[in-house]
Image 1 (cartoon, helix red, strand yellow):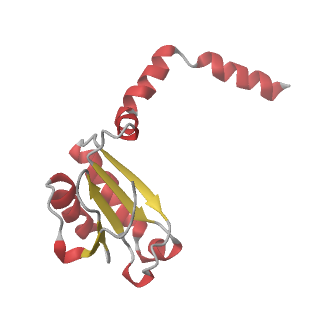
Image 2 (cartoon, helix red, strand yellow; image 1 turned 90 degrees about the vertical axis):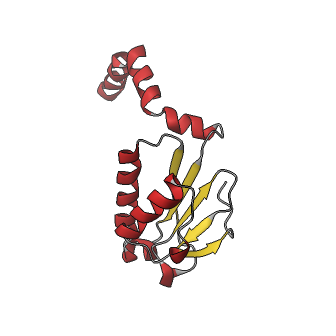
Length: 137
């Protein structure tokens, strides 16, 4: 009974203004779901990727995204891509372009890929494993 009362109290404390703030904070995500995205970045986070450093790559990516203030990109995770020896891996897909699969990533490579490919629209061929090959949209 006490737990039910606590739940009711929580619901009462959320105001319309609170909900509007949540909406504004997540506006880019909602826009992307409607298809108004410009970039989708998928980081492989299977156990092999994590063991190879995918968490550091993901942290770097999220930091670069926050610093850029880019609101038309979405970051997602997936499991193992089947190329464990090439982890950490990520797939970058810009609207109306072929996805690029990157491998053997680290923090510095991810920064360069973010600047050149995500922000500049030009794939970084020296880190690319393949064009296309995955369907991520």
